[in-house]
Image (cartoon, rainbow, N blue to C red; front, side, top):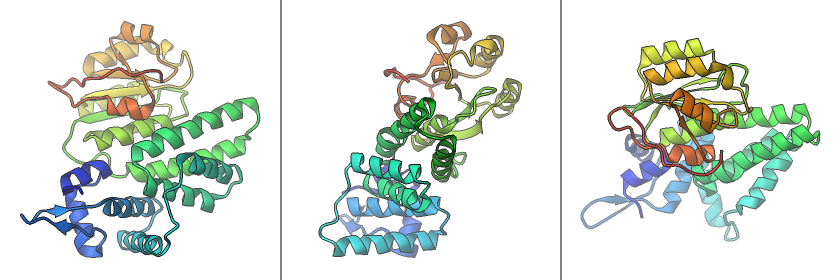
Length: 298
């Protein structure tokens, strides 16, 4: 059983919103301790995750709550219903996206959100799928159409999870991809997880001119700037601009386009690990400078 603060932290939803969903829609069904405190169960957590999934698909809050409660009732009538294994859902997602079946793909994504934590879904399903898809595309076993279709479906779901990530009072991170970098899904995942730890996110996306990024940094005074590139050597031509950027705000470089040598040359930090782990390892900034716990490979 969880106090509302812990439930809020796990789900990335403020306690004010959780209380509103509880009072308006009956989405949460807490028990009270002898001292009058509300305690929430895993069933409450699953219902909120399902509501988040429906909100990400564009339903209104009232519609999303009704859908989540309806699914909860269906589960209670089905004694054989059990959380699917991650490997099973990975295969189902792959088959649906390869077949251009959006309905089936969205259903699998809904199930992932309901049965697993956000970090597990992103780290163990979405990121491995994107990596595999990239390899299959390079080998010619996945078509450009399949790659675009799958990327757009996943981008849409991530965009729903990212909604409102610039709000709040936490430290600010500016995230961008450098010129000619068109793959921003890993950076979006990094931003979503970083936001769940309390950071606000300004996301500039793909192929951002570095002079535009510098102007954004000068105007917003972020606590952290992250540049991510997937192709080796992408960031090398921008050594002078990166050095100037690092003087204005703490700078982190990520992806195959960054190297330890480049990071050292421009006085930036090299982010390692998958995007979920990397975001989890970025600490709360002290005196304006974030701390980073190193992890392996990115």
